[in-house]
Image (cartoon, rainbow, N blue to C red; front, side):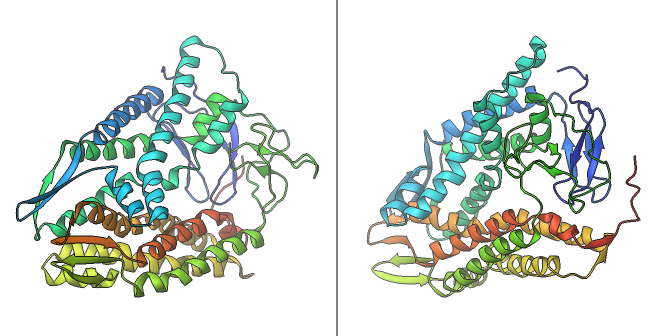
Length: 435
């Protein structure tokens, strides 16, 4: 793609703080940031279509290879257990943990594959458009693809699963001989390529390439969500003028538009968070897995596993498990509760305070999914360590509760409208927001 104009000059409302800004003509390698909160509004890489297609195709090839060969093997006293990657899903289902099996299948294999296929398709359409020099016809299927595609992103956990695999290997390396199959190395390559491909995707640029933004005279640069003078679409970033109650849909993608409602956002976020807190207690009190050795069954809680690793001298791994499975969920729940509480207070605060709270919110949203490491460790161990009466590992009741904690805290953070942080921040003189 040549370094020509990639998108027309357009206004965009920052999804973090709600400020309306005017974006200049963007070229390859450029990025645009909100002048108030510094959130990245759009970032276009060099050769965006060619790069993304190459990484996505390579990633899908590695995924196919990782599903085709043995993943790893486990040997004790001449007895060997070899598993394929898909066995991690099948074994959880065999032990009546169908919900965890489905979660593993979706987050590690199915959703990443669907995401990469769809994003490759969109970039192919954009590449064809630029080569042929004509605008893509915005069909209803194309619009629906764009709408649903980006809802997958928070749930792509191949990288978290890989860390879980490495942790599980260290946990059992002292018990037996571990062998890595071709599939393991292909999965490592798949994870790295997937992370890189996802980082190249820019939602705003894709929408502007597929469906040009529609000019809305009357939208003021420098206004925000509090003014009530406009409604921004959370699907395609189109800034819309308020319409009638019976026809309040985006002029660009047709999605339903909703006025900013701090109360509704906070109620939904609090509901998910309180549910997560309830599940947090059984997740830590009940065993997350059972280890059977020579007929003796030993339950293991999350904290018990941390203590065992520490006693065995695996200090870095014990620290990783403690941080990911104990500290992060608790800290995230406290941080979200603090953010929600302050977002609902009528007291105004200055710009720097709003920026700090926004950064804390984004940090909690980013690290939340890494708590899933312990669930993936259980999945690997259950699939790998099944040597009849000699040694076996089975999932415990806490595994489902802990997965519920991670999912509910993620849903709480996703459902929270970060503009609530800015709805009572009254002192913004530090930024020059005029045209």
